[in-house]
Length: 124
Image (cartoon, rainbow, N blue to C red; front, side, top):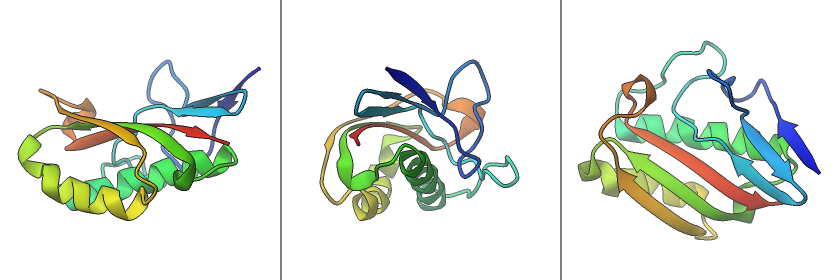
């Protein structure tokens, strides 16, 4: 059974997608960028500030799905500049303490020209 995740504690989808999907006991989040759900604006100018907001958005979606970051099994991380990797990794490591499997790649451009985007697969 598929269930759509929707919470006002994370940014609303800005296109034809959901914040996340639950399939049986697996949670798939859409990629999260550093949008403040309260005002819809990009939060932060540095990679550290933007990564913090991305993590808060992921936490909110996982909470709505009935799970949390400790139950993440796989993340995919997108960076606008691989030179930001160490700073991104420092913030990421505070939130993903169980060390899920991960891919991290640099991309040419991210939505709204943000510095990072992260998607997660977790179990309930």
